[in-house]
Length: 388
Ligand SMILES: Nc1ncnc2c1ncn2[C@@H]1O[C@H](COP(=O)(O)OP(=O)(O)O)[C@@H](O)[C@H]1O
Ligand SMILES: [Mg+2]
Image (cartoon, rainbow, N blue to C red; front, side):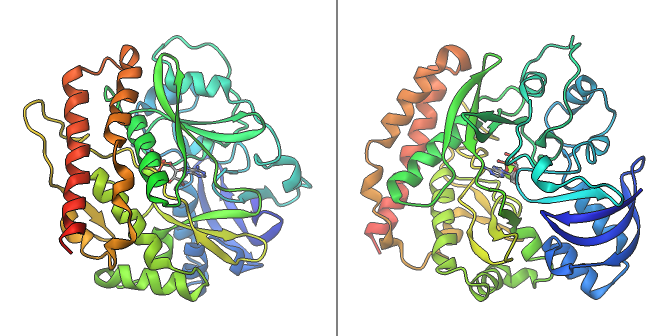
């Protein structure tokens, strides 16, 4: 099928798309390359016929093969691979404005995008979060849920006309949503710009809920795309330089804010798709860094141990994995952070974990351990700041 890759109302390029294989096979014409996803813009400027980059980017919009309980979800949706979902709703997403338009179609962005047009995701949400295998409902595939990234079960929903992302925990773990919420509370107290997460109960499980931080005029550009051509051993400084050169002020401080949060939380998952920038899709102006999101894989969640609290660890730092203490050394002025504002937050976390205990079945011992860990991390940071 001949399609036009669109960025909102702008034609980016005309290409041949094979729906069965979910691959692009030919680029017929490039129209407005500057409006392409940044990674495609870079690749096609050097090689006009790099079809594989286009396919890879497009497939990357779909639900990844490592999504928790993917097989069960696909069988409920009645498809055999996530690729089949890619073109079901023009490939539209709630994290950017790209879509593919059949060449002869007269369909208009304003009538199909999910920022302005409602979608029904009740059945998808139920299929995602309920454990039940017997599922007879025909689930609407006209929704932005065909194009979500990440390992955790998730679903976009509309509440009071706003778009929210619901995210579960991983397999038998229950902590991820709580980690999102405590991260929000830490950011609030330290005055760090962030995505705000609350809790909600869906299918007898506690999930996190955050509002979409993209609107019909913006897109999220993950750091992975911005850094595609960088020198891997100098990625941090290059990233800051690129952001500043595109007009994002105080880029270094904003990244440092993320490292501080990740230091306190021992976040092990700050890979290059878990932060980025927001760009205006009409003017292509880079507006700001994206508010910090995805803080679930933190507080020893991967190797929780009944006996021991592990107060040290390693996090990702661009293309490296480093001790949190070494990542912290990148922060130039720790005195910017009013760490005393975190006083009492551990008790707040403890109350929250107890409040939902009848649903999560978290033991008192684990709650106690997690809160001791959080307290230990805060004290560690306090000591470092006070001894500077
Ligand atoms: N509030 C949001 N608004 C817009 N896009 C979002 C929002 N939160 C997450 N995303 C997008 O969805 C992707 C998956 O969400 P994320 O929280 O990273 O889930 P996971 O924990 O499964 O990795 C992100 O990489 C980002 O592209
Ligand atoms: Mg993520």
